[in-house]
Image 1 (cartoon, rainbow, N blue to C red):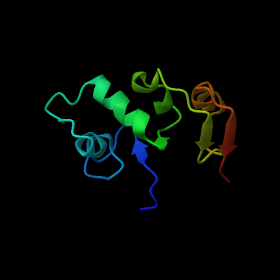
Image 2: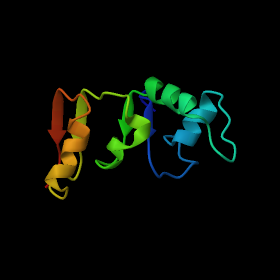
Image 3: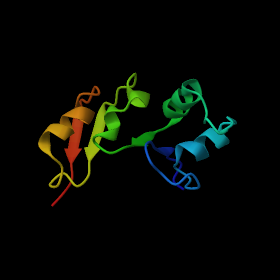
Image 4: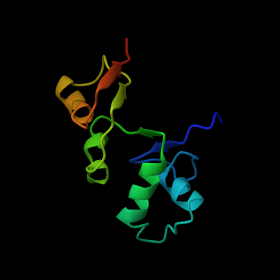
Length: 100
């Protein structure tokens, strides 16, 4: 642990330390049958230093109100070019494309 608060949005094993469920529990929110409300999830996202998502997932409704000035695209050689526009359109000022 280097003190970086990493959050993975989208489909993720709930027991992993970077999952939304783990973060909700850490901040004291209940994850009932229907899950925590959007307000709780937005609070968790605001506290994250790094938010990880797929390029398509970065366009999900949960992230609609957030801007991400720094974007890193992994596996850039395998992604479909139009899909990269989704995270880049979220207020990016710098982007790094990583891939072979």
